[in-house]
Image (cartoon, rainbow, N blue to C red; front, side):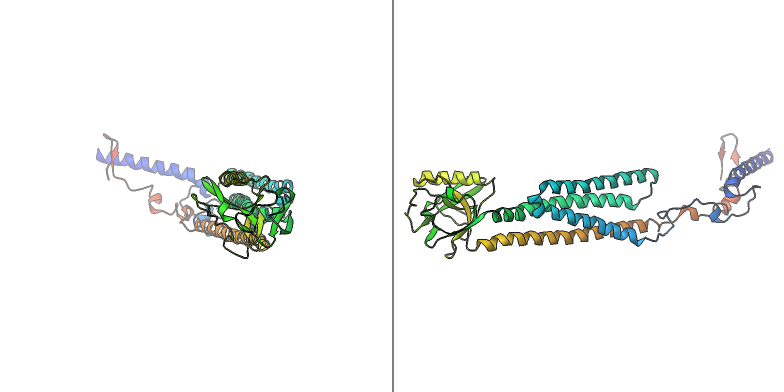
Length: 367
């Protein structure tokens, strides 16, 4: 009985093995179902450069394109959003920036299409990501440079420079188009009539008069006020803003920030009420010794920030390309499934893993 069972089992195994060979024969190029060992190249499909076991050779041209194209666009967008063009032709800046945004959207669409048709990682995906980051960074950094440095510089330079100004005789309404003031000798800060207004930030003001306290202008209106933020006492007349302690300081730079002027006006109103004085047309400025040097320094700092951002952008794109290159290269270092010899495997030639006799009562094989 046992011998009959073993004979049936061998016949079943031989039939299964013949069936497997018949199915695999066309795939392996074995027309007659022969068990002859086939070379590996006849059994594997074409591999991409990212297939495991296929160490890639990177093309130098995509590397340079993915470094210099995003960096060049970054520098251009950063420049037009940082300097004169955004001040004089803001619509043109928006138009040019929009063109590069459209280019980025096209690159995203191309990368998405390539990703759907070919799941392998490509430079298209990397390029769309790095270009989007470059545009976003250029716009944010450029606007910061413009608001902090370029805008004040251009606004002050568009106004007049007044020299030998006498706060004891001149009225504020006559100098509304001035950006830089040089006061006549004898003009100074009136510390005793300074005051402040606090709303989160302390806005400090001090009138400029000719002579010493309690001198009053001929117009009876205190129209020229040196100002600053968080640079005075909250309980006394103690103005410490700008070049307040420099005896050579006798000039000012006009405050043109629309957000701060209302608070300085409230501080002047409190000083009027406290000291029983009048200010009909207050003009606010930052007290300086050399205002031209300060204003030119704004432009210099803006250009320095631009260069630092450009260098940072280059470092960033080079680092990104290096990371992408290493990632692509390491994809080819793992063992390839196509390197396995399936046909020549001893277990395959023997009909599969060795198995014990089958128990027909439990339908289990015993090793």
